[in-house]
Length: 69
Image (cartoon, rainbow, N blue to C red; front, side):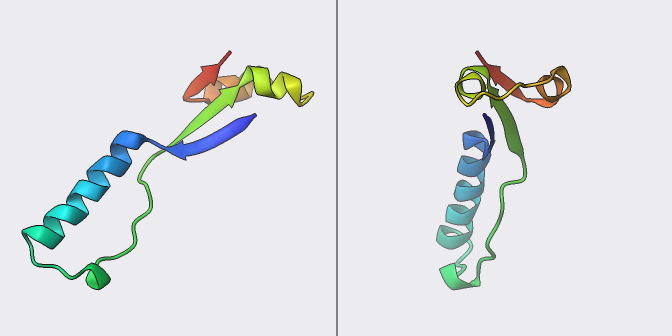
């Protein structure tokens, strides 16, 4: 099973930036742009892949940021 998710720390930093711009910068919520996470993590779950009958090759495991047994 493969998963791509944004790092929680990155999302918290982006939210803090919005709060700063609204509270201290005087920005209106509607004027702020929608942002996507700057970094996503690639996670492979071997247990889920096995349950689904998938074979995860070594090249995929090398690319993964995290491999869950």
